[in-house]
Image (cartoon, rainbow over all chains, first blue to last red; front, side, top):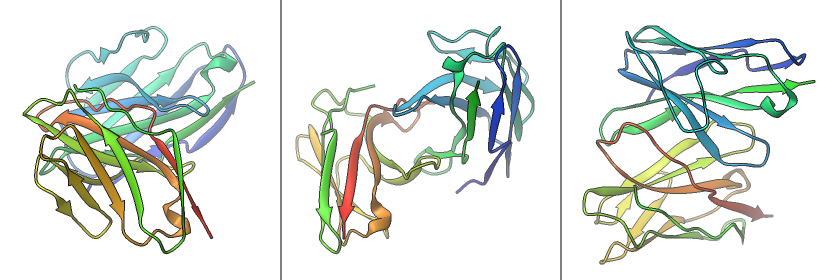
Length: 114
Length: 110
């Protein structure tokens, strides 16, 4: 298994501001993934973060809005920039590893934008 | 990745078996069937996965049809804590990202 810690667990923010979410994994992993889950919806992959290179963004997500850092093999951050109420979601950090390439998730960051 | 189809919702009585179906008729030979669940307000949790043989672990059993076009996740004795959204995903074990569908919302009734 993998232990993934996310901070903050929740936050309430004003529109126009930015929030940085941190993700710490208990061991080194090559790739880290960031997902968004809008209210009542399934998970949508935002981007894949590799250490030492630019993140790879999925269709509909751009670096200016969701900049990602990956300074080492156990840590990543996702910033939600210039927030609007439509950004109110749960943001989840995830890694794949181990036999069977199983995916593990953090508990998520519940963001509300007013 | 192959598309999967699941019923949007199901319910079962506490203590009874919960059988969750998944259709993956376009699955390719090197794609596994993965099951995850998400209990309210938590991150998704891995349950089980398989390629073509039936699998069982401490959480559930996975039955895959011989033609691999469908599968069933079985929770043998459902409890109230099994109420969650269950996701069936067809994916290569060498894949580097997991794509989620809409899942099945299982309600376990007292």
